[in-house]
Image (cartoon, rainbow, N blue to C red; front, side, top):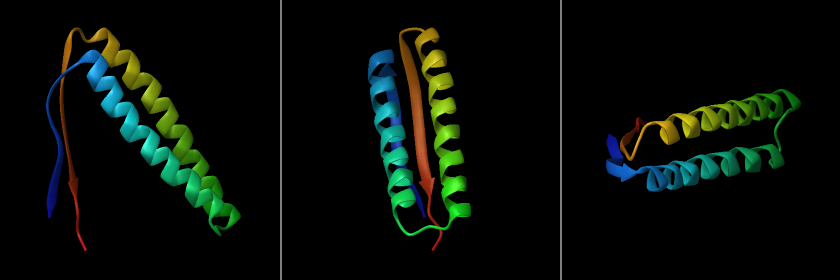
Length: 81
């Protein structure tokens, strides 16, 4: 099943706001996993994923800000159960 989450043209401010909200939700989810009963190995993996998200988010912000007045965002989630 494919779930279309985002599909549209956004100005730079709107794009950064929407993307920032998505990144913050994902990071909060990962931080909650750290507080759950995970092994040390799992915690390290989750911490590394958080660091990757932070680096990627910083790079993405720079690209969006330098891109101009608007951004086309499209995002879908592929779900297989």
